[in-house]
Image 1 (cartoon, rainbow, N blue to C red):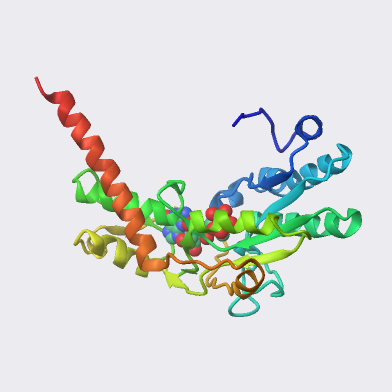
Image 2 (image 1 turned 90 degrees about the vertical axis):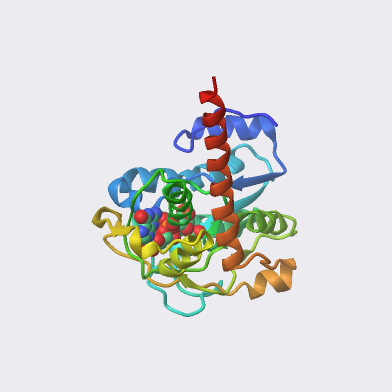
Length: 281
Ligand code: GDD
């Protein structure tokens, strides 16, 4: 593997890179991807998350190559949901600058497929989590706090809206799904989801319960984590991905929570052990 320098805001560099590399497959996962943050930096989010996508698509065209293109589209595009569960034909109603930018990128991908015959596809992925999830997203924020509280290193956890419902799956399976999408001969759009939805409260119940703690003793309300507009309910129907790609999620909600809590507990135990060894005479 080789890491090249590049930037989604720099089209000349993208054209040069794609011309030199002549890739078979491009997985475009780059974005300012934090929904809450997108309310603070909307213009930057539109530039990188929205325009960044059209810069890559245009770079493929300019470089005269035929790379297959995967766009990381998001369940956030459904926002104020118009249908339950959401499918590939549910209309979008984004509720954040991030969601708006992703809708732009989604249609740019469809448009380049229709205009120039690119093999360009959208994976409309619902939330996908793992122990490698960024620490400011709610699942990992919770599982890290559970481990820290259990180890006596943290006393409280500030969270925003606990009533939101999300369709949470296991990220490694979704990455395989992305690969399956690009193994198709034609570009297309696919929802990837578990078809289950759970509140943040339910996540808290399972995560704290895993280490025999009651979250109500530790969780406090942090107004700064509320969003100006919330996405209340997400639940996706992955029927098309099952039928066409033979893709199906196997790790469901309780197991996902366990995997994440256990990984953070393990990481802290290792750190504790190291610090303990460091203190030995
Ligand atoms: N981050 C965060 N922090 N979210 C909180 C908190 C908190 O302290 N308290 C409550 N929440 C709620 C949010 O309001 C939201 O309803 C829900 O938890 C999930 O928030 P995130 O984990 O930040 O994820 P997201 O659903 O907004 O977006 C993620 O998933 C999308 C779909 O796959 C991101 O990864 C997006 O980039 C992605 O497109």
